[in-house]
Structure formats: structure tokens, C-alpha cells
Image (tube, rainbow, N blue to C red):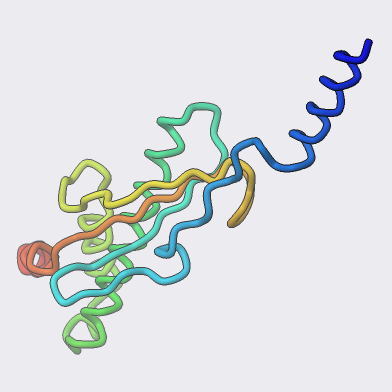
Length: 143
């Protein structure tokens, strides 16, 4: 009986002292997307999905779409011909830059938030990058 009591106390202490694994903290790139002179970066977030592979694919696709919007926005501020171009031209650029089938982007980091430390539970996050020289090459083909 004494051993059973001791085991119960030990189990209670372990449960309240946090001996289990603590959630992994959110990576810094969620709050501050990297910037450098050679690459564009973007973050993509999935919603909860039944299959993990679908969640990663969704996050990557969303990151690529965000990257495309960011590149078009950046180019618009530097190039008045794009600013005055038709919406169809901009849509074509966005479509090319965010196309999930193209290998212009590289997934740099992945992080899953099962417990909801950063945001909603069971969301998947990716950080992607694309070399600026490749983005410029793609844009030249569209013009």
C-alpha cells in the first residue's frame, strides 16, 4: 500500500511539474520574414486538414501565391509600365510566380503548430524563398 501511495504521489508530481515535452516555440520568421539582396521570402499557412501531406502542400501553395503578390507589388513600385498595365498582365505574372507546379521556389523551413502556440491549433507553416534573378527572368518572359 505504501508503494502504491508513493507511486501516486510521484505520478502527480510528474504531471504538475511539466516533465512532458513542452511545445516548440514559434520560429522567428513568422514574426519577421527574412530579407536579403538576393532573394524574396514569403510565409504560407495551412488550415487543419485530415492528411499532413495536404496541409504542407496547402501551406506551400499559399506561400507561393503570397510570394507572387509580393514580387508584383515590388516590381510595380519600381516599374511604372506595370502600374499602368492591364489587370490581365498582373494576373498572368501572379499565376506564373505562384504556380505550384513550377520549381522556382525553395522551402527553407517548416513548422507545425499542433497545440496552437502561435495561432490556431493544427496549422502548418512554411517559409519559402525565390532568387530575385529567377523572378526577374520570369517577368522578362511575360513582358
